[in-house]
Amino acid sequence: MNRPIEFDERRVAATQIFRAIALELLEATALDLSRSVPDLADRSERARTARQDRADAIRWVGGCAAHMSFAMCCDALNVHVETVRRQLTSDPATLYTRLRDGRQAREAESANAERAREADDFHDTESIRPAAAMLHV
Image 1 (cartoon, one colour):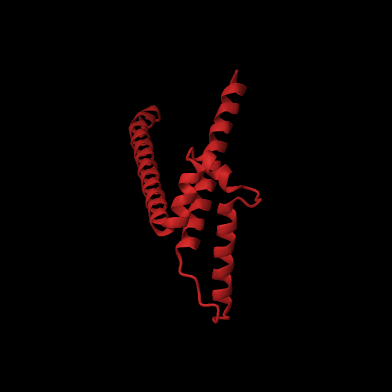
Image 2 (cartoon, helix red, strand yellow):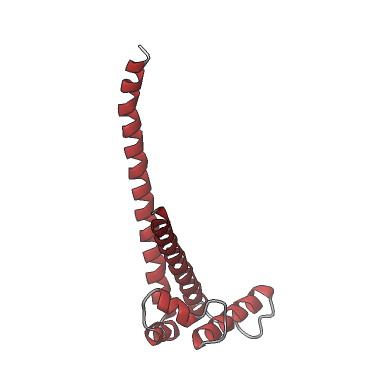
């Protein structure tokens, strides 16, 4: 009887992980595309890496083969591929800001929920201690 619940919990957890990875990939891509392109005369390692990151991001959004494709990320997030592609190519900085702000809000919400659970656990423990102490009298 526990197996179906266990399987369902694993499926839900895997879906959440997959969505988190998809969001991270889209955020990193938006960041790469929002940065200014270094001058071609700049031969520094940093400039070369920035140009390569931008070229990789453009190829990925364009549909190149990848372990986790752009379309797969959009599907995981239930968003239309062409809509996100247009946003990434027209205004990646705004999309990056929205993704980053959303991630930070989710992280804050998660931290608040964790603190609330810890507080509940502490209060539950505190209410048990006097009862446990009475047993040892």
